[in-house]
Image (tube, rainbow, N blue to C red):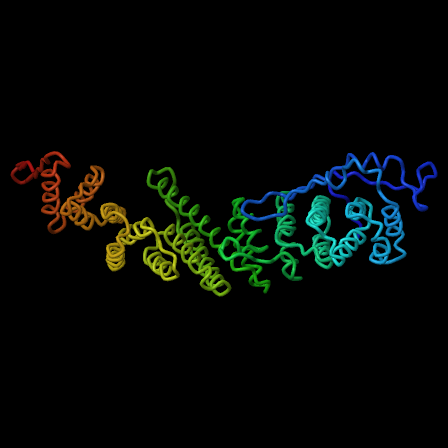
Length: 493
């Protein structure tokens, strides 16, 4: 397979012209030495956050030297023999090995990596170097850079995805072992050029063939990346959250077995989608409340509910797959994301369950999570859940009690449970806590809507007096009109 040279490299030309100096029957054109002095190979791997890639390579030390004129006859003979392709490359290099320096071997490798040359020779040269234990760090960097240059050109020139996968297989066969970083470069090259379909097809092809670049390493979850997870992460970072979910789901359903990390990425994408969906719903309801938007009909309401159900179904399915593949390694991260999903959707009991699951998996939730779930449960008047959460937080001393009671108070207010909110406010006052004016005023305003209920007036007056005695509000003037007698009764509280 002939491949173009890496971008920025000069083409090293050889000639059999009689005007040039002869070396063992092989002649080099005069411009060659000049080109070698100035040659640069500036191919660099694309930087990708949090993922280790081979270092950038500059080949000045390989190709630029004051001793360029000292290239031996063995170098020119090796190039000529390899270009003829009469003998096996390993036989050619084996016969000339004593006459080739390490630098000359690198130049042979570079020569056959150029545009118009046969990639087979470059790969065979590297394979021979590896078998002869002549691949040092510099030569390895050189070959990695050459391979990355080929990748850039193949992607940029719209070659078939199969060509790229085939190249990686050939590289693997000669012992270069294309790891995750090299395959990641292919994905990045496709994605940065807006070729999402090609990136997806490439990942699926590599997974089907197996053994190339899909290695996961490290003890931490964030270190255990693979191809599907990386592409899903790219999609999510670009705001294509549901595309990331679709990618992981399709790979799983067609038997390609994505790595456990990919399910966590897909769950993270679902959390982002749920947050955006919930935010949009709040804006819509606010617009309906102000009259800027008409009330939703049954069909629109049904579509909203169906989309919410679909998001939750996807989350449950992905979490099940993640735990099947990753076990306890990913359990904490999975329950944390499910907790975020249910919290954003306002599902109190389900959020509480995930809070306990997260704790059992060894990942301790912070006090803020407890408070948020507590407020959601209070807004839905889930007394059992509220009691369990308060008891657990008291035992664990999870955060300041005043902050917890304020979250509880605001949860009751949001749900319209003003009597419960008043009880919480009184509990704060009994404990010596001084709630803010806005919280006290919100409770009193809510209690005004309950004055027609049994004990509604007494509850309201008692709270007013209590707040006034603590100088949290001013005196209250309570009045009652008896229409039959045209009588007003007023009292200062």
